[in-house]
Length: 145
Image (cartoon, rainbow, N blue to C red):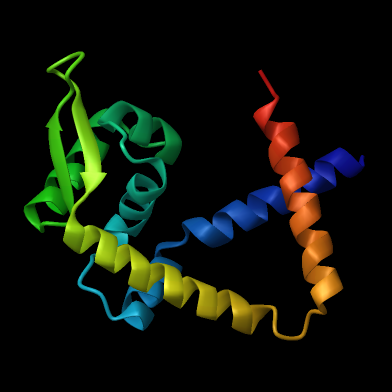
């Protein structure tokens, strides 16, 4: 069935983005002071902020304690800031620090350059068709209960 092929292709795409060797290359190419093993947590915080450990752990598919250790490491390195939630002091609200925002800008620019290179032989209409299909897929998946 074509749905099985779609699912298999999506798994391959997710695996591509979850590889720590690719994260290491991204950090090296960006020239930023960030452990490759922290890149997914760090970039997810940037996209989700403000967030908390539970939501981040759920998104990353990691345990609360593992995610909490990553948060502690990123905070110790000055890349994020945490503070107790006003609604529940047991919950840490997590945001990028000013230094974290600067590093995010560098990583995003590096990622854009990588993607531009990867798609250099694609026509603008092919890229637009891919974007339209991905947006349609995103909307479809968002509506799954």
